[in-house]
Image (cartoon, rainbow, N blue to C red):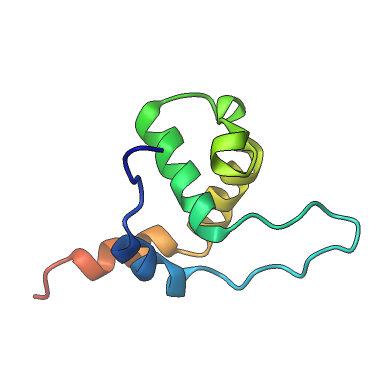
Length: 90
């Protein structure tokens, strides 16, 4: 991609908030890079394309995988914690 969707500084804020990775299955596909998952999530949410249309070659993961990461990180409170960090203190 010509323009960076997820600056390194943003990834550094998100990375420690994520839940620990699940153990990899022996017969499963190779794991996607977590920064790639965040970039794919941002791409879909900003562009408005359906998850199924995410360009797999460009991001290295399917739209379904990106969607699962969004759901997993939402359940873990990642986005809420990011929002709380930005809120001004009383």
